[in-house]
Length: 132
Image 1 (tube, rainbow, N blue to C red):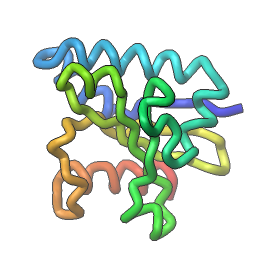
Image 2: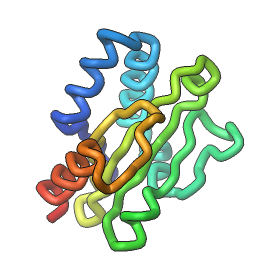
Image 3: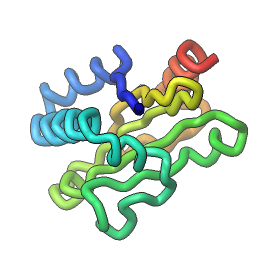
Image 4: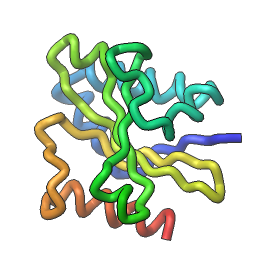
């Protein structure tokens, strides 16, 4: 059975969103709660391009730069937020042996996934601490 946890870093990201982008925070929080309770949606979190072309509530993609190196990092975008001009991404890891997803960050789309970005480094550190 799959599970989903939200890392303290991502909780802090959401708390910041509640202060400045309440609609985004509410939508992301509600979606994460929905996903937590639905095994099919949890399973979809490791299907690259799930929800492409707005075929589902959200779109899943591998963080390819890391994924190619064996680091199981993913990103999710919420289509309803995109339509409102609130482009945020949820970055998460999948811990295969435990069938557990870990939400590691919630970032505005201006985050470019650059390896030198402090947010990227924060995600890498959290991943290393969780998944080894």
